[in-house]
Image (cartoon, rainbow, N blue to C red; front, side, top):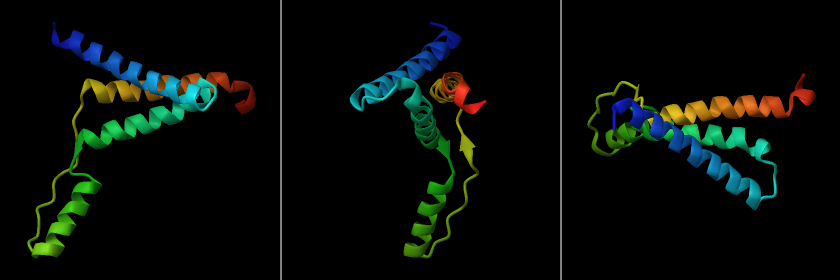
Length: 110
């Protein structure tokens, strides 16, 4: 399987998993899918971004804890976000869910 095929596959799997989580929550709480989809996509993208980034706020907090405990100053890491198909799928799902939400509520917004 080629690299681009795997990238597309994992992007679609990510979007499918987020859609499945949204469907499960919507059916569990008896809410319409379009009311939850945007918020679930934001949470999903945030979680994926958190686990695919390096040198962010959580790293600074950990470095501060080490410095407070040992007195040794840690070197600051530059903030990096590793681009991967899961992050791309999560961001694409945010975009699609935002369009779906705006379409569903266009009479109330515009």
